[in-house]
Length: 353
Image (cartoon, rainbow, N blue to C red; front, side, top):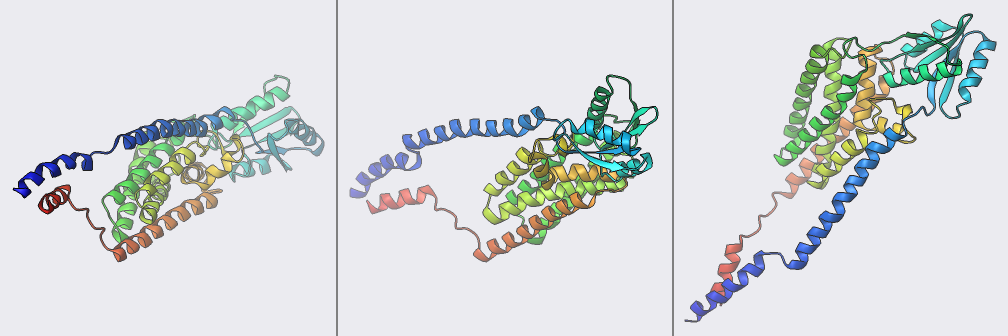
């Protein structure tokens, strides 16, 4: 009789145990209402602010020719304070070599017929256009001879395909790191999954962007290797953070490479066209380093490729080491205990009554 009378009381207590209290509902709603606008504001700042401030900031530019004429051109260019970082060269041949080595984005050569502009649209079509406008303005609006020393691919004259490849590689890397984490792959299995995914993504991306759309001028293998390394740097970073600090690491890694790395990459312009220190920060992150390395390999025979290649290799190596270390730590701790089902505690309360 007492057990029968206790059962309804236990049943009446069960809903209050399983449903969150009204204050909990209010806290969750307040968190959503406050967090989403903050994320939107950060995203707007990260993407819109650099785009709104796009202009030359210490942009490396060469000046070549006779000393007197070159000095006059340099003085005119330096009148735009902070816009250009001037490099002097004795003649046009030396200036061309500097452009092909990615030391400068272009050069103004003083000749007997007036200034002659050398550009490299493969490095940045936007920079080439900016230099033409600046030199034409300094020439009083007169037409200035312009030579594209390192042009983009004829199939992609504006470099749109190359700059657009940054976001898909970033998304692929985030997805690979998240899936490996959620599937609970650990140790060398996780490393193999990340590396294999990166290789396949790089091959597919090179086929689409290079073989199909014709955006690159070099062979297929170098582009595929760069795209694979860019993907691995992102996926290893995301999976490595998740292995060390848990599932929130996915969100932290995605925020860094997506909200900061993508808009700070300078892929559609140049790092020196972004306000300081955005351009420099972008080259330390996988999207920016990947875009710079892809340009070097695709159009400049690997010139200035060492820096971005080392950056991507470091992100990949540190991320994979974190995956291995995090996997060992979780294995040592053993599986997490599963919470007892709610029905068991309800039955126990009823029996105790």
